[in-house]
Amino acid sequence: MILDLRTMYIALGATCLIVAAALLTFQTRQFRRDGSLQWAIGWALYGGFLVLIGLRGIIGDFLSIVIANTFFTASYSLLYAAVLQFRGRSRNPGVFFVPVAATFIFFWYFSAHVDNLSYRIIFISLLSLLQISAIVVALLRNVPVSERRSYRLTGFAFILMALVMVNRLLEAFTLPFGQLSILYATAFRNAGNIATLAAVVLSSIGFVLMVRQRAEEEVRRKEEDLREAQRITHIGSWYWDTSTDATTGSDELLRIYGLDPTREGMPAFKEQDGRLYPHESWQKVNAGVQETLKTGVGSNSTWRRSVRGPRYGLRRAVKWYGMPTAGSLACVARFRISPSASR
Image 1 (cartoon, rainbow, N blue to C red):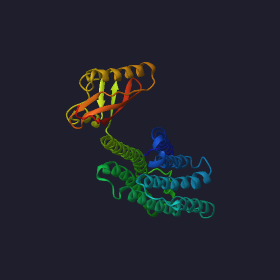
Image 2: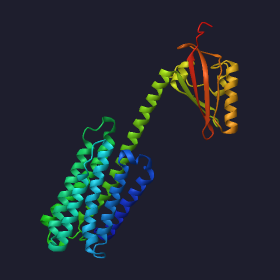
Image 3: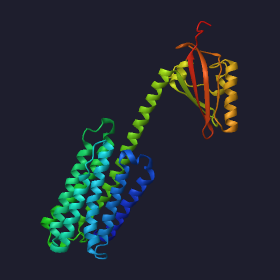
Image 4: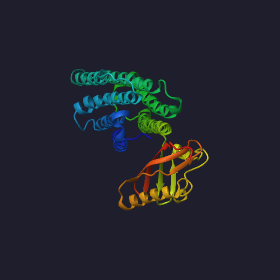
């Protein structure tokens, strides 16, 4: 079945714009460091290219030919810049501006003076193939083993885009002039548009997965840094969900209390009385907790009763601080070795 290409191009352009808007909505916090902004704008420009192509014959040639193809080249330049930024590699401004300027000048000149459709197709196909090749190489070179799946998904999407451009290049050499128009419907052209849709969706899913994996890795690294910092400074932290009475403690806090983090968890708050703290010390902690939950203002307390832990011997709790967070309580307790360790 041969579909109406004008409708398909406009629908594909709208899809690209929706994808770009979704990235702008969900990736705002990461824009400055992972390339999401360039990625979103790149697909928005690609969507603009498709919409202008779909309106060819309705709007002027300058918009539907010159500006449309300039958007096309600019979109790949921005996607390449996004990959470079995500991989932490240096970017040469010429990589963006030279292809865009060359496309604008070439199509402006040829649409005004030569108007040879075959030349235009060959030029834009070869240029886009070079840009796509650069994206794939930058994307797949030295990929971490743990992240290969999402990188390969994104790379596969761009290979689909390259195949579409190869098909367009072959058309320039094989089809009669009357069938070269991008609005002339053929089965291969419809298949190419479907492949383009798949590439837009798959590449963006892959890129989002790449960003997510990067964020998860950063969280794991920060958690490890926090555990090491707490181990060195003998600072423990715990978190109490007042709605479920679930209490979690950091590894260092559990070790301070003589608990094995690999086998034991933080006791419920009320169970800590007499088990983790002497009764008088727990009463101070409980008073601070209740005051914090009542007023919504962070509180702290200091006491000098002993806390025994087999790993560190006798310890003295010197500071407790609690801060309410949406029905929960986040707390930090600091301990130091008691000078009267023989007591």
